[in-house]
Image (cartoon, rainbow, N blue to C red; front, side, top):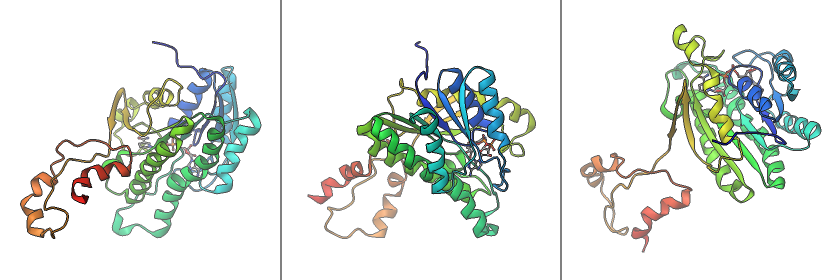
Length: 302
Ligand code: NAI
């Protein structure tokens, strides 16, 4: 087992003033990275702002002998994203690692969800990832090296009552990763996504107290550190992680069925007759790009 080190590497962790982000930032710094600790310092629902959250983590890192700078921009604006990346470049000369982690919640059952609750959650999680990743990606591209870790959620991958806005935003991050995986390939930029479970401000009233204390952010940290390291050569993958459980999860495409010859019309009754095979997920596997799905259709296009 070789040591995972980040000497000479520069890492940005968004939302690093608390919870999961804080535990990543501390460990990156302990292992030699120079860290930008970004945090808007607002409340759980996205309101307010304060320098305190980021400053406390920077102080913790410095007290341990590490190197870090604070950034207080919101990820949700283009200016904020550029400001975060500029902080890294001005202080440390480059960006090697980006962890898109900042997040808020505005839970409401779908029929009661207001437009602002939808917009704010989409803007922090999904637009936020665009705003920070674009300038970071361009620096990484120039340096021919990058590791990006996005944060999705079981709510997006599998659904969760009261979180339509959050689920949609979090699944959007999977789409972003899929294409960054393809566009980053020739620049040695690897993008992966985690779906964590951890006790934090976001989940303090979600998990029962005994479960909350057991789901320590420190159990999510190791897979983020590995994915962000030079040792990781994989890209475009999603990983569940919680309390010592690490598992890949994926959007998959099944073999399905071929009906007809690609020329004659297919009837709804034929779909009905083949329904168990169509929904059956036989030989399901993840695809590397949308183009790969053409392989299944090709026999019908001849
Ligand atoms: P947390 O609330 O402890 O940390 C999130 C941090 O993001 C906060 O410090 C907050 O100030 C910061 N933040 C919020 N909006 C921001 C903005 N616009 N710009 C910059 N910083 C901002 O929550 P936690 O649990 O550590 O969440 C981290 C990520 O993990 C989030 O993306 C969350 O959706 C995701 N996640 C967490 C799960 C869990 O079980 N804790 C489950 C699935 C996903």
